[in-house]
Image 1: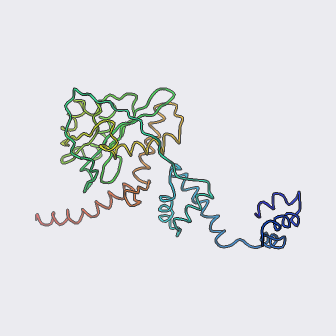
Image 2: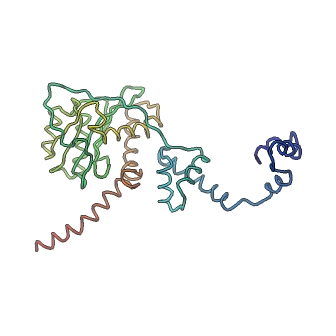
Length: 307
């Protein structure tokens, strides 16, 4: 109401506005109260809110403008701010920011009835006890002014880290998903013994050049069904977040090269900076580092026992 009076004070006068409002609202602001409010120093809460609103706006923008109250609350706590969940919601409302919402999924893979299909070794249980035990893979697309850009991701189920990705102008197995798989294998040290690679029944994942590469690396192939959001749910979720958090917010996209550069930046953010609710508000990099710290004493003990 102070702002309302400020807007019309020059036109009607403070006394007249307060008298009019006072006649309709019992105990409403008086002209004396208005002048007292204008001269009173800001409260400690108001000063802190001013500081936090700016911080909320900055952190929200730095994280692709996608965080809702839950992740923004966790991020503020990580930054050292002692704030509550409801307070975070209120600050976001003042800052004019909010979390992004997902849209409907569009399917891009096509089944090939003639291809031999590996068994489903996952059965919708997307859990792993360590990194490099279960990877999921899927393809999505981005419309650009110069044609479609197709994007392939390989994600580690344990840490939610995107371990391999590729952007191309084609869905061909030897160009799009194979290069994403090779990137993931290179980061893992070249061998994938004991790892299960799960994808859907898309022809690009069942192509001989792709399945042969999985076998060559020592991994075991697994497939769900094409067009089923449950049989490859984690990979579908990664695609959905990528489209929601990056593609739809930063478009329109002019070229495939522009999508590739933006995807590279997004993958780094996803792996090293983005807070994941499924990981207890930690990043994939933190989860893998924590596992490595826990595994190190066991490795050291085993090494000593061999001497």
